[in-house]
Length: 306
Image (cartoon, rainbow, N blue to C red):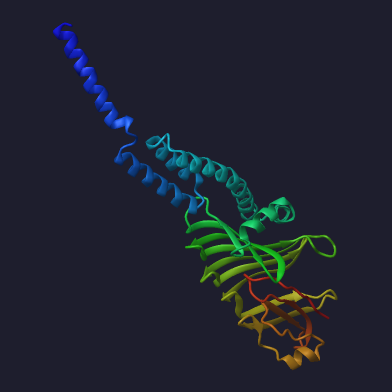
């Protein structure tokens, strides 16, 4: 064997042992640490339902430990969950578009279809399911809310801070379960804090094409308050006007005795809005009451008048 051949053989032997030290004995400590870090990163993204970034992090983990069976299994499970969550995100994106465009029919269709069952499953533990397009628990989001004491799905689209409604937002309730089949909707668009309407906002209440309320209100902890002027014309042509006051959501300008004297039922619970119309002599001509325990917890409505 020539000197050149001996040197080449010695070099190949040394290189082989060097490769074995790196590869033959399995992944290095650095590779394991990197894979673990990427997997933790993927888990954090999964908690916020940001599955795209979670999959990217998991891919980097697999690049470090491509033969790790447990890691492969975790990656497969992640891919499965990512496909599942896509359908939830698609539903919430559709709800967001419906609220932005004030498309009550589209929102009601989501509530009446298979989508509702999927959302109920997501909301069963906490009573709500919130989707953030940019991930996280703060920023612009859309929420689906359910309640044990009524079948009245409700929606919120707007600002969140750590999962609570805070800032500007739209609360939306819609139902097609009406006597005449027309869509009924209630919309509050305004200020929120402490996960409830607080500040100023605009409320719209409508049944089909008939607008019942379209007004700015002051609101505190989900209940309207303040003094408001009203002017309207009754069916018989009588011009009526009046002033009414709301405190903690309850009308306080007229006494319960006066209500009963005018054949109106006195609400036992606080209510969002109550409007009395007067003639020139100051007599009550009509009354419209819109009752809700809380703008964020279940809606109950009744109307009465004369």
